[in-house]
Structure formats: C-alpha cells, structure tokens
Amino acid sequence: MPSCARRGAAVFLAATLAACADRRAVVVEAEPGAILCRQGADCDAKWARAREWVTAHSRWKLREDTAAVIATESPVDSLSPAFTIRRLARPEQPHGEAIVFAAGCSPERVQAFVDHVPRRGARWRKVAGPAPKHTECEPPVDRLEADFVHFVTAPAAR
Image 1 (cartoon, rainbow, N blue to C red):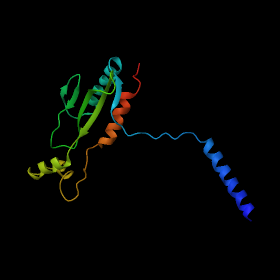
Image 2: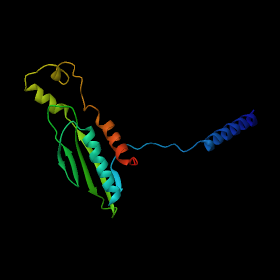
Image 3: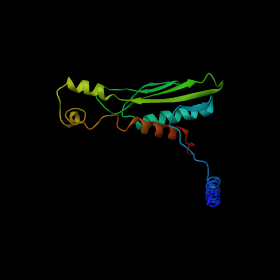
Image 4: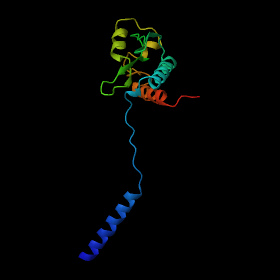
C-alpha cells in the first residue's frame, strides 16, 4: 500500500503541475488612481480629456479651469458629487506628471442642512427622515473614478 499511496501522490502532483503550467497569468485590475503621463503632448491630451469628462459628468458649473486644476462648484444641499482634478509634477520622474481625481459629496453636510431648513416635498425625504435613501454620492465616487480613468486613458477617437 505505501507504494500505491506514493504512486497516487505522484500522479496527483503531476496532474496539478500540468494544470498550473497550462494556465495563463491572472491579471488583477488595480484600483483607479493617479493617471501618469509624460509632460507635453501626452499630458496635454489627457488633461483635455479630463476637462471633457468633468464637463459631461458634472451637474455643477466649473469654478476653476486652469492648466493645473479643474474644479466644479459644490453646493451643500445635494448628493450630486463635485469634482476636483489636479495636474501635478512627479518629482521622482523628471518629465512626468500625474492627473489626480477627487470627487465627493457629504451626506452629513446635507443632513445638517436639512435639519435646519423646513422640509419641502420629495427632495428632502431622500436624505432625511426615518429611512433615507441616499447614503453616499449618486453615482458612487468609486464608479465615477473608474469611469474617469478609463475615459482619460482610452485612445482618443480619430
């Protein structure tokens, strides 16, 4: 029996190794983060796409639109997110820059505002009362960030 057990273990090990050798590498998608680019045309094109994305996805007007910052207004009585996109130099990369996404809205600020203002209709029921429906930005910031990164880094349409 011991030789039979060894033979079975050897067959199992060989089958396992064969299965592993046949598999392709697994690609794990990293969470969205800074968009890295090279100074000049690469970053300029990505910055233009960042501005295009913010303009298309923001409910709010731009309050700042410079070569370093794109920022929207951010009212306190809404769960529609405000955006701030920054273009930063990367000291560790002499000719590199990073485009950094930030978005947010604050249910706590909305709740505090609602608590001090008479409730008017359905608008307030969504954020106040016994069963508020909105507990974070709508759409969620993580989904917006993933969409932003995908849009800005996608090859430009010709």
